[in-house]
Length: 171
Image (cartoon, rainbow, N blue to C red; front, side, top):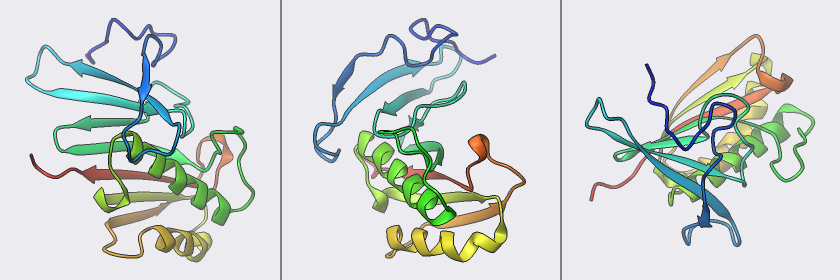
């Protein structure tokens, strides 16, 4: 069974967290909440990251989890966190998904250059050139490994979702 933290009641992950100022790499004025979970059955530690600069999780999952030198970001939809609205068209949704990824990376003290793997989910493979055009603007140099998969449907009827894995330098 999964470890349940006493600070997160079933009704709302993220409750009980204290916001703190984001690292210098975060957008000006950004705040995020960080809570460290330790699983008593394993000798591992994970840090749950969340930021108001990316859409809140819509289910029982975290926006991002850091474990050791790796950061795992949940799939980001193209929802604008400031307005809660979904832009029209797959290109605009892809662009917003990648902005949301940048916000999660900034909350973790990382950047696009730390991304080592992406998975892109799209609802229509005919949209691949439009998605690829937006993706290549962000990952122009030294792009990470990538998978792109066409799926039947995505949450909230979005057209694109992007998830990433990032690596931090060894200490």
